[in-house]
Length: 108
Picture (cartoon, rainbow, N blue to C red):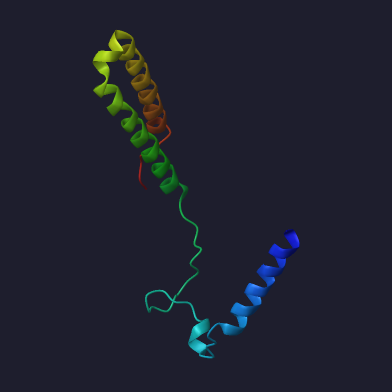
């Protein structure tokens, strides 16, 4: 079974190599960015601050998603559910204050 699968892969790659359209145009080897010739390296380093803000946004956005089902079922959960949600929100606030004290929200 393994030999048949490997043989089929080799045959298909070989067939596609011979049947694929060939272009000898020198423009084919140039980089394309919306018709503009690139001036610098596209792999420029980004500031880690962008990643921190993105991770914090995803974190707090997901936590807001968890609050909605709790609000819908608050009567069924009772006082225990209310206390658990307060603990959850306090943990979120501690994370928010920690990020604030570390200067994550300060733009330079």
